[in-house]
Image (cartoon, rainbow, N blue to C red):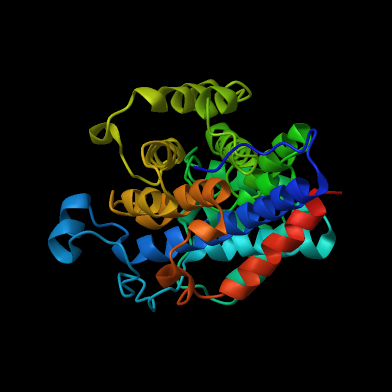
Length: 320
């Protein structure tokens, strides 16, 4: 199990090792997200029983599914995460206007998959709504239904960028959600996930739920995070509702002891398997690091080199 990182009183060699270790956790976080997505997408919308009947236990890339993906190909979860990561690297920080424009460019490429809340908000953006308003307009158009998991599936680069600066982490996580998902539960879900990632890249798994929950101002999300400790597997509901997704991902991470077992557990819950897998993969990757990723998952992963490079660049920015 990875040890907590501290540079207090270390010699140069130990500090170098810790920095190398942390960079590998940044890489692990973004790769873990993409891997969870690519493993889960082919079984999205199947329940756990249907997955078991058709595939046994999913432990490798299947490809296919309703999106007809190639083995190792990811869905919109990773594609939108990459929009944020590329923006952070190119702009040397978080700029929601730039991210919104990248989302629109991605939409113009006719992606295989896009969530309804995200699509509705991006259509508002396309018609000239400012990024601060697009999610609110979508929320109203959808009758107040914008508490989906579309903003937590993509927000991990922000948790990495601001792992040392909680104020910026909270502000930018909230803003990143507002572009498409205006509901306060979705907004504070991004904060919860990014706070968890920020702790895990420092090796701080102990007391994760209480530490993350303490700073969540939205009461329903705070209660959900704190309540994960008392849940059984049979309590989990892997739906596209932001609370359900985050609860499932945290539970799978906290109730396993390796990156591989965490992601496999998450994906085999079924339901919104790509997003539950992606969110759990980001958590597990942030804690266990790149070295914990099985080679059979790394080699066929689409876009692996770019994902690693972006993680390294975000790591460098996070030191400034």
